Image 1: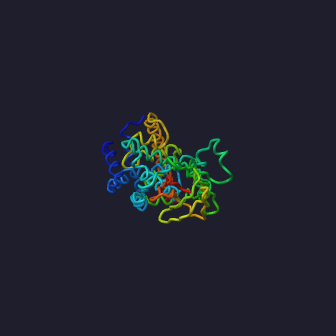
Image 2: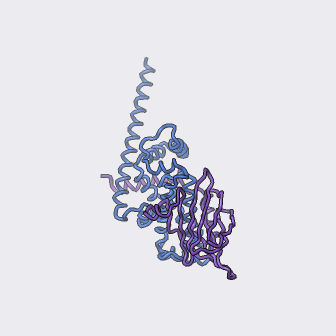
Image 3: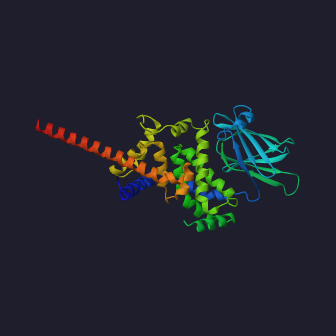
Length: 156
Length: 210
């Protein structure tokens, strides 16, 4: 059996090879540093609690209305249900706020922002959207200032 | 990095200190990248997982229950997001297949082979190229484990366990087994090469004497 020293030497060599071949791309490091500026400190966070892509349980069968991907984000006071359908390289989004209420919804993707309105029943739709990392930010209530809920980021 | 130092950075970043955030990114990026690459994601998908992981952390900074375990939190997030994207069939199907299928034998004209060729070209010595070829012939699970273990700076076992969804206790034995296998494959490659060189030399001598 080879001893620990042999392993250490081999590991050192492999580490060196991996550094040459597969270091973190500098542009990605910059983007990660820049992610800090995207914090929404004035909004409640709606965490991703269900994704039909990975949460394959019976709920998926019940909730799925068809071929779309179902996502559910939950905050203390608001749940945001979204179905994303794929058409070629674009994405269509249909959503529902629970409890139902009107709201202004910002769809954030990288540097771009699309603003849409949810109707009195909490329904909204958007698209075509680019594929990519996405977060929704909902401004709800008629009070001033409005309260905001931002979802976890997720790639669609 | 000591747990107390990590906790301090998380608290500072949660309070708006962007320098603390940058230090966190610099310290854990190697680990996150190694995880995404270990799941054999194509570059755009690996980039999405990497960025999603950091965007998630930015929003969760003031909600992390055990800041000293930040590395494990990040590793778990990166693993979950890697699996999520791998299953997103609407996105790159080849990435999904690459995730599921071990890279035992690659077709000469496959995208995998093109990637391998490009990687080979980045290495500066024949020894390094042999090591990389041997590495790429390991089982998918061994490649994944070794990539994460070799991340810079070297991750704690708790982080490796979170990255791969395996018990901490099995990391050491698996690490030794994968390295033994790598050494064996490397030795085979070297001996095959020596044999070829020897044959080439022999035939050259024979043709000279003819």
